[in-house]
Amino acid sequence: MEPKKHAHGYLYRVKIAPFSGPVEYGEWFSTEAALRFAMREVPRDIGKRYYCEAKTIHCAECEMDEKPKVIAVL
Image 1 (tube, helix red, strand yellow):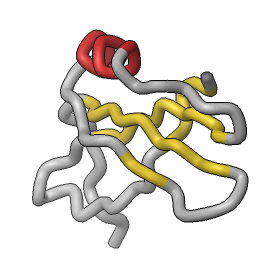
Image 2: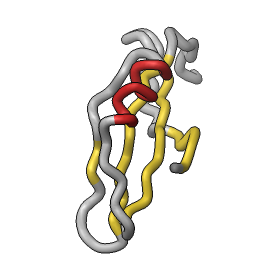
Image 3: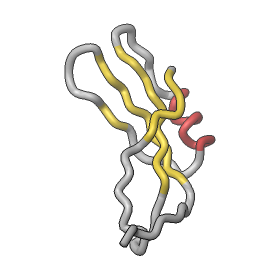
């Protein structure tokens, strides 16, 4: 039996990937506008890649565990 799947919205965060070293993740935001506002405060360094990720919010009935998807690269 296939699990139920329906969306309840999205969460957004920034992911910072340096060329060497561990990936850094920002906090989750409930709107793209909040993510854009937070990104204005992030200092951008040469040698790092910046991504905006989104993931679908599912309810407990959905039993889904999807990985976040990159929606923008800065």
